[in-house]
Image (cartoon, rainbow, N blue to C red):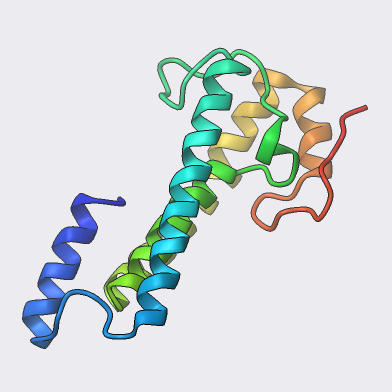
Length: 151
């Protein structure tokens, strides 16, 4: 979602519209690179928290054993996906690509549907009242201004 598919989208757009692959605007290129690096950093931090605190991974066959409510998870319930979205938005800016922007939007919509109908009910079953309280206090996508403290 952040490397192979964007490569093909950018290559296709460059050929179709006969334009350079990178954005012509230095401001767009810099903003895109900053967003991409920030998104990658957020993704790495959240995966690390899954391993260290959650005692699991992002893989469905090795899920976390403990609910992770630390670091960026104190502000927003899905910082890992926000990291991926930041990478995708950064790539869309850096390459001035409507296709990559559309891909990021599609990724957001698919994940929202997945979280509402599958992931969140599964987390409620696995972690019970602890997750319900977390869900009640921490927003899904737009971060809180202050970190949430359980209890």
